Length: 66
Image 1 (cartoon, rainbow, N blue to C red):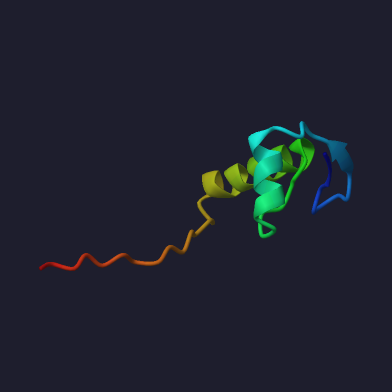
Image 2 (image 1 turned 90 degrees about the vertical axis):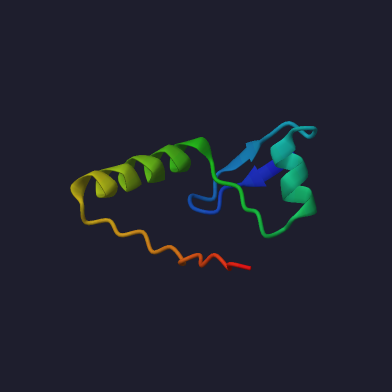
């Protein structure tokens, strides 16, 4: 299966029977990112987390007591 990276527009082949290929076929909201872009984003995010200037906004989950 041919897939295109959403960031760098590189076209790659992945196994037709892989879990990732099945997910891309059945759920169009999922996008493909090549290994090079994935590692670059991971490294840059880790640098920001380590610097202390990274704030991750998560929704507050309130537990309902019955």
